[in-house]
Amino acid sequence: MTMDGLWYTEVWAGQGSAISLKTARKLHDEQSPYQRIEIYETEGFGRLMTLDGLVMVTDRDNFIYHEMMSHPALFSHPDPKSVLIIGGGDCGTLHEVLKHPITEVTQVELDERVTRVAEQYFPAITASNHDARAKLLFADGIAWVASAQAGQFDVILIDGTDPIGPAAGLFSEAFYKDCWRALRPGGILAAQSESPLFHADLICTMHKAIRTAGFSDVRTLPFPQCTYPSGWWSTTLASKGATLDTLREQALSTRYYNPAIHKAAFALPQFLREQLDARVSAP
Ligand code: SAM
Image 1 (cartoon, protein in one colour):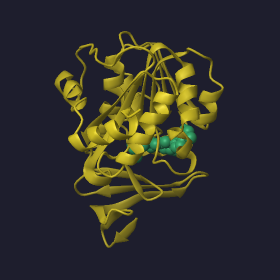
Image 2 (image 1 turned 60 degrees about the horizontal axis):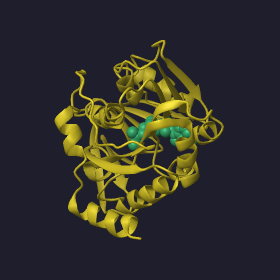
Image 3 (image 1 turned 60 degrees about the vertical axis):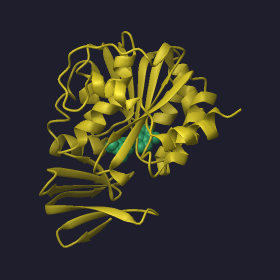
């Protein structure tokens, strides 16, 4: 991250590119036990939250990420009642999950300060934090899932940071095995899977690890996210036994997601399909 005058710039390491957002002022800066949390007021994207200098949330475009992290998984399940979110400290994914008639959602976020700072600066996405169905825990999600009761959840959403530091284990086969165990039969996992353009290797590695962990159907859904590296992001869905081809249509107040987006998001760009075919499907 560099701040050049009024411009906040996140350099996309190794990619010869960067994103810059024009800021009006810095609202918050703290070092939590886990990471540096900063909030800026920007001119074009409303408020911006960064963790260790990387863009996490802006007012203007977070709805795309949070809707795609939640609704494709929830609408692919016939009757989701119990949901687990790992990470997700800004609570945008939680807010979308709570739009569904679920019974309970447990969120396990490593860093309580991310949630408290989000509550202070992002009232819209944290508005549901006191919903009686939501249980917010602050712990390492990897260790938490390892000791979770088997067959407890219908849907697990992995809304973590990039695969470095405490989030590296969120991309491991051992973690996916624990998620598989914690899901009921027919359960669905959705994990944020970085940029199709910049991180196709990681997406292939994730597919292999998720399949080896026992999941039967694994699909990556790309979507636009202009403030994340390459401006393009993805979620990878996987099912414990069932198919991901079933879409349950139900009216919901959204700004990006709808049934047509759901169906279209399953279409893979040719380069990614070829890479997955060569590296994952090959015997
Ligand atoms: N939208 C973001 C992205 O893709 O860049 C992710 C947002 S969310 C703020 C990511 C959260 O994952 C952070 O708050 C971080 O503290 C949390 N996290 C990282 N590793 C974790 C772990 N092992 N267990 C639980 N939460 C974790």
